[in-house]
Amino acid sequence: MGLDTADERLPYQQIADTLREEIRSGALRPGDRLPTVVAIGDRFGVAKMTAEKALKALKDEGLVISWQGRGTFVREPGDQVPDRVDQTSAALVDDVERLKRQFGRLEGLLMNLYSRVGEEYPHERPQDEPKRRSA
Image 1 (cartoon, rainbow, N blue to C red):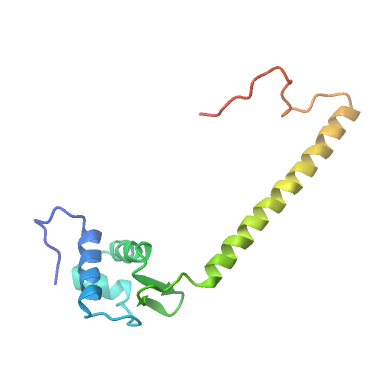
Image 2 (spheres, rainbow, N blue to C red):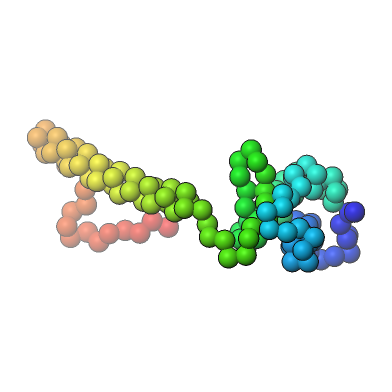
């Protein structure tokens, strides 16, 4: 089964729509493993990247979930994003805050060193200069 060349939708959209309809119709049920990107590519006559983009669209909608080394599976309706994602997000936020504090301390040490040698810290703006926004 190939793609409809007369269809105005992009190839990945046609593939995602076909798979979405298979999920909604029950042909692919919750817990079922979707075909691999290679199999999808063969089925629709597209490159691997196009098949990956179609699966990404379904993931973004929350219809499927991928597990590294296991495949892509139809999600149960109402399934929540795994706790692991929430934990990873929280850990990243903590890491960013920690790095900001460390940067602030390092910047303070650099400013102190510059003042000891009698030079102006290169990133310091005089108080009367307005902050500039980068374009």
